[in-house]
Structures are given as structure tokens and as C-alpha cells.
Image 1 (cartoon, one colour):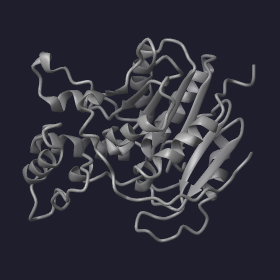
Image 2 (image 1 turned 180 degrees about the vertical axis):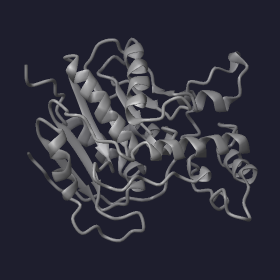
Image 3 (image 1 turned 45 degrees about the horizontal axis):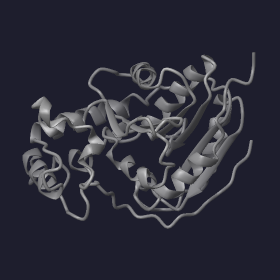
Length: 298
């Protein structure tokens, strides 16, 4: 096992790339609302093409539901690497159900490896399970998880207004507050994204329900045995901002579930900040240095 600590100057702000509506794969000719393409289970951030033909990176959102925060990786990942977000769906109910659903999409996009997986919080558990299955099939896989601890309490679902990143614009207080409605939050989000996305109050209610399901599926989950290595990015601060007493314990708690090395990177950040714009360059560097591991036993 190897472990090292890294500290980054992080910000809790998140950024929606309004200048890249194509990153959501929307097809205006289809006659559907722009919202539908941006909330599909697959978000094509930088799709495969003739010149984008490296080992694809699949970014799993977990209880964040939407993978839009990962769009900022485009500026920091090799331009030959396809990038896709995997977002929450109404269908799965467990980590393994999600792994089955996502694996089908991954194999549809890229029938053969190698593959790269990046998952935040509950999405980290799904990325781990997908890696277990891909490595069991003999594929080479790089897997990095963010704020994912097998012995931590189940994460809390995110309020609806936090599920859609809006740059520099304050949306109403969390949906569910007595003075705030989902319709008000949706209107603020639509104004902040300047027409790039169109969400309704019903959309936000649905996303909030998906976040609740994705957070609950962590309860009682025990990771499977992972052949090869695992890289873990660990928040050094609790959600409220206080320093965690022993963040490196996350590495120790992953060891029983990993055959190879567990490499930990501790950030001066809360769990939410691990997908913030200022930390994405460091996440990209960690991805580039993590091994593309395969099954190491017969």
C-alpha cells in the first residue's frame, strides 16, 4: 500500500460552462426540451471521434445526480481522451443495480478497454463495482474515487437547488424551505444559465428524489473484492468545514476490499469541494498518474 497527502487551494464554487451547450449532447432537431439531453443517463462531455480515441473517462455523479461539474475536466485532460458523465436514473435502486446499468452504457460506448472511472461519493462505490466487473472480464481499468469511504455514514441527499450548478448567481434557499418553491429555484437556475438549460420545478423535484435514492443506496453496501489498485481522493475537512481528525483512515478502510495498492490523496477541502473548478486540475493530474490496472491473479 502506498499513500501520500496533497493539499490544494480549493473553492466551493461550481461552474456551468454556458459557452459549451454542445457538451450536453442536445439535438435541437429532435424537438425535445434542452433539459432532457442534459439530464439523460449519459452526458457526452467530449464524445469519441476520429481524433478523440483514447481510453475513455466515465465520471459518475452519485447523489449529485447530474455530472455537469465534471465538464471542467475538458480543459485539463488530454484532448485525445473521450469524457462522459454518468448521471442518476429512475431505474436502479442499489449500488450493484447502478453498476449493471452503467456498465451497459460503458460497453455500448466503448466495447473494449482500457477504461477510466471517476466517481464522487455514492458514485465512487458504483465506480468501484464497475471496475470489479471490468477487471474480472480481463479489462484494464483506472479507477479514482472522490469522498468515498466504506465505513462512513451514508451521504445526505442534495437539495434540489444545489443539483444544477450556476456560476456566480445565488439561487433561492434549498427547496423545502418554507419561503422557497421548486418553481422559484428553477426560475433562478434558468436565468443563471442564460437559456443554456431549461428546467422546471417538476424537474427539480424529480432530481431531488433521485438524489435521495442515490444517497440511500449506500446504506448496507459492502464493496466487492477489487483486483488491482484503487486511488482515493479524501476530503480533509468535514461538510461543515471543520478539520477531520484522521482523514488517512479512509485508505485503511479500503484495504480489505482491494487486492493491490490503495493510494490516498488528502485535500484541504470538504467533500463537495472535490469537484469544484479549482480542484479539477489536480484531479486530472491524479487520473494521469493512477495505474491502468488489470486482474493480477489467475
